[in-house]
Length: 194
Ligand SMILES: [Zn+2]
Image (cartoon, rainbow, N blue to C red):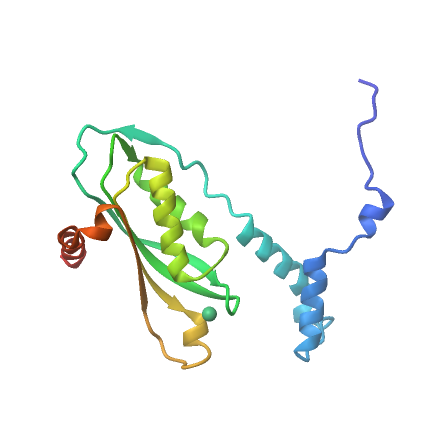
């Protein structure tokens, strides 16, 4: 091998500043900080890295399915803890997610529910849409029409600012039979209480 494959960055490429780093630098100045003081010197780079880690999050493969012969049995996966960002304040909220569904032919591996929940959480969200997005994705992957998702969240935009009280917010998304069949919903809620 004689070919030289080492590429030096193009001069103009190297000169382009990272807009997220630049933004953090400006933010620090706007809130009256000195971005060049010791503790803050690396903060704009950390800020940029954290945003990219959050947005580019890869939950791994989700489409592992198993065949099932029963169709009426309810499967419940409860208390999947996810972190998301409230799109109104860009502040974090954590959410305990419970997913219930009645499989039709295909069973989703248990760990995959957590991956679905994490993937939907890793973007700017509101809790109501988070549970609806998770429900829709479970339907899309498994083909099951009867899906329920319940989220219980604590929002920093409520506990840190505003009314400054810790409060739990509950959101639900009911698809298929869960929407129309109150007995089925009752069965699920009783199961969660036990
Ligand atoms: Zn908020």
